[in-house]
Image (cartoon, rainbow, N blue to C red):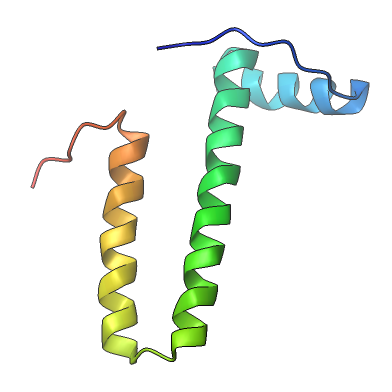
Length: 85
């Protein structure tokens, strides 16, 4: 599902976004959607890493949690379709 919204950006931001979108063969809307999703995921992972650090979890548990989260991110970027095993 796609929602149309009105957003405002600086001229420099739009110019750079258009350049990157063209380079990647994406529409400006698709590139902005991807950029926003990546930023949101970075926020989630940063919060997760901070929580792991505060909890002083052992390295094995942290590595397993990271592996699960990497799988979840891969699933998100494949439009929610689980990856083939």
